[in-house]
Length: 143
Image (cartoon, rainbow, N blue to C red; front, side, top):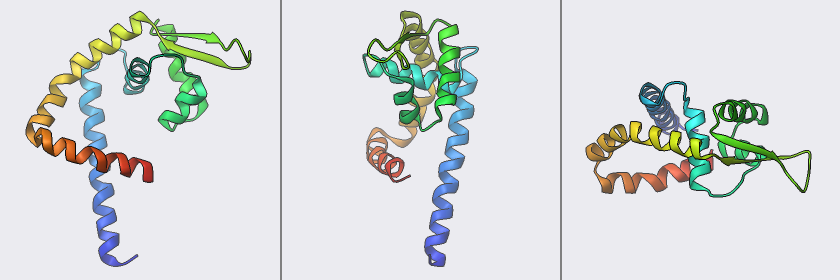
């Protein structure tokens, strides 16, 4: 890799990591008490994608281990935010759905983070955000 490409790569990843830290800090500070970003992410995914998901599917979606998703799901189930049932076709597997309480908690979390998101969109402009999304999606796919 040339020095210019190396510097470009370092700058790109430095900005991504700094943005990630800031987003996590800002979201964590406004999420409802006891809710972690991982909890919100799973609830939001389940709310957007109607129907059931297996823990393995969720682990793949979030690029985490099955142990990590099991831990998150256990906390969400304990809070009453998800329902976990055996898979009727394969008793070794489980299926997860968002509960009404989970949907309500997700909606409350969304309303808590909305001002942060609105401020970012206002500062960057809607067109700037729309132009950035495909680049971020492609970057995620490449990683």
